Image 1 (tube, rainbow over the protein chains, first blue to last red):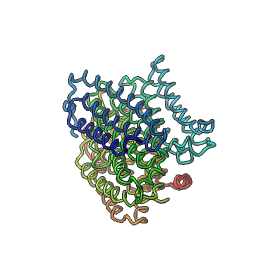
Image 2 (tube, rainbow over the protein chains, first blue to last red):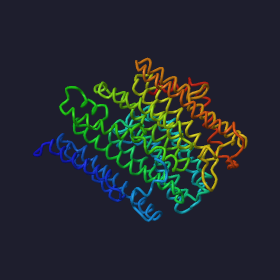
Image 3 (cartoon, each protein chain N blue to C red):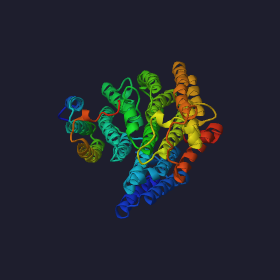
Image 4 (cartoon, rainbow over the protein chains, first blue to last red):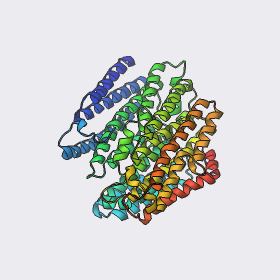
Length: 101
Length: 470
């Protein structure tokens, strides 16, 4: 491998933390979902890097599964977002807090 | 993938293809009740196939077990799907659910749970877990007119999506450290001399965080009460039994194959179990809503199951599997009763709705009392045998303090379960009469009651079976 694994891990960990920070800090649902996407893309990067490190295709195959799963998740979550927006005419997460949590 | 693998996958294929068939039928022939009955029949067919057909291979493509253990959980989750569909019949019709979609989703969820329980590879574990998590995102918000349902769906979606991120990153790090997705071999990267031990440890921590979210261990349990309260009662039943039990079934395989790194994880799981029991118990004490109470009760129960998992060995694993079965039938029955009381306007949830209800609906309230006693662990119910097994295994493996905490939590739990029973039977009639219930609902609840008492009085047959499959 030309790029050392530690560099890949550093980048993907940074990406993951940025995505997680986005989920925690943003109140808009679309931004929360984008944060989750960034987290999952960091996972994909790690898997491709590890796949090259161990000279196997397993990791790359997992990335394809991950992409398929992510697209399913995005379609469901966007459908839910549209539905929530129709109910309350807002996408702020704080608007949905009727139950004591 | 060979023909033998396909044959071993037969029960899962029945569930998944049956789910697609029900979905398509529903598009052309939108009748709710027949589609739900059809879904239940497909789930039962899958259960019988898994129970009676012994496949030629013990492992499917290195992803899933198809030995007795995998088949046992396939039978269990298929039966759970069938019972859930039976309790949903009237519920779905009164709320104008799309029958085809509802039944298809539940069948697909059962397929995901069966795959997760049987997984021996992180790929299989991830795909199985996501299969039913995605299904639950939809099912929780399935009732479109219910504002609480939308809120519950949103909360589960955000929490679940973050948990998915953690799970995937944890798996990726474990793969980086070990170079394999097979769970048993990947765990060797946690060993003392392993090259990338810190990476593997970070991966394991993220994996445990995600698991904590899924089975609602404290401090990752905050979504549980809200989601239970907002979800339709039959879906909440599925959520509290299948989605948590399947994760624990996979953990039993994982923990059992763990040769190195056990010393590392033990204190962590010990603390998680203790704090889960404590916080869950204290929060349950001040609930005024039955569904929220059952949510916190499920948090406490996951703490008990974690004790069994920690104890390990044949005793501990057997106790965990038995406990999962006992907990599943009891919770499914309890949520089935709530569903059977529901009217078009909503479900009875607050304790006020149950005041004196025991005089109006003695049979179902009596059954509810049996379920609550079983959750508290009073003999002669399944819950007692389950708890006895867990605490016995814990004392045998030296976790005496945890066992003591568990017993104390059970004693306190008697208080909050008894409160519900007192509200139902020892106050003047104040509650409005609720729905009389239909045949399918009563049959499903009756089956759960029968299983609860049978496992409590004669647990020998199931215990023997569990010893054989482990």
